[in-house]
Length: 238
Image 1 (tube, rainbow, N blue to C red):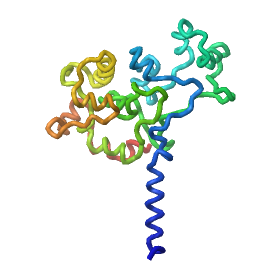
Image 2: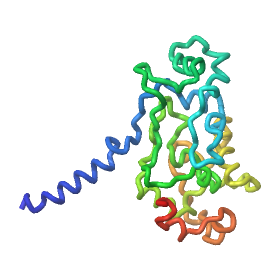
Image 3: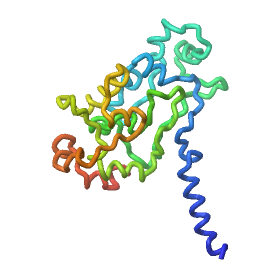
């Protein structure tokens, strides 16, 4: 009897392990050459995401800021801080930021497999807020992966985009992209938030209620989205 159940037990164990944080690294802070705090820079100082990630609106990747971006502030403040020594050294030598052991570069926190095509600018242009994919970044002292990035998780949104697209009912004159970044302005300013906005602020998906969801015609007219096309394998696997 137990031998007959063995394949199912092994399948269940493997499936559970593959979806656990041990494999996905969801919620696991990664060691970095400099302990950069999004909470301090975004929540406390109010720095716009695009200051450090200027290509996020126009490129397929958010990008990692060059050392010069860091030094635009830190040439004036915290100039002798020991934890910023790798930044100063990188600026002086023109080489990438290094760990104490000499390893170069930052540990990439959010990454899709090589066989997956993902474009940041398209998602932001359609009204998908950063926190919906990355979790409550503005509350992270050390950045961690906020969502699993599993295929089933991506398809949940691709199959029902009308359920997750962010829209600010008070600023209908703004484009979806403008509304995304205005949400973070509101969070930083302490402005009143709707229930959906509060959920997104906490790192949730901000799902719309059924009576708030857009029709397919509205998706195509205002967001240039075709639901059937979003479920095509080619969209993510090119």
